[in-house]
Length: 207
Image (tube, rainbow, N blue to C red; front, side, top):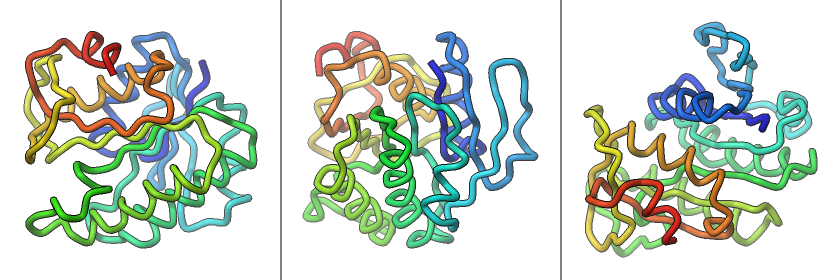
């Protein structure tokens, strides 16, 4: 499958590319810093500006059959990138007639009563982009909501039974994102996750 990744130079994006290439997919790696992406026979770097118009973003999608949004400004550009950039990408995807869309969000983004700490503005951006995806599009979406991301080795095991704040290996998050694409039972689902004890493929199949 030909897959477009928005946010290909981010921590999750880089791991996601590795996972999808291992599964045999062809990647359009979209990023503002596309010159930082090493292209090869499986990965084509694409310049993506989420400040651009819907038409401009749509042009970057080429002949992709599925799209991931894993971009993030790390708090520096929440409205333009994490919120409005995500919404414009959704609109561009629909304009191109692409149906499958996988969206990286944050834990409890749709449950403001559970927000804590210093990430409130980030969670607000995810609250509105998640709601737009659910209520204002006809995409075959999956929304993944992991807790805090940690640069630790992935165990390959997770839980989706989340009631409290969770921690997540970035490698585990990327592996789950890649697995979602092949599991149609995850379409139209919001999935909370944390590192756990169930192998990823098994956990995703049970959703």
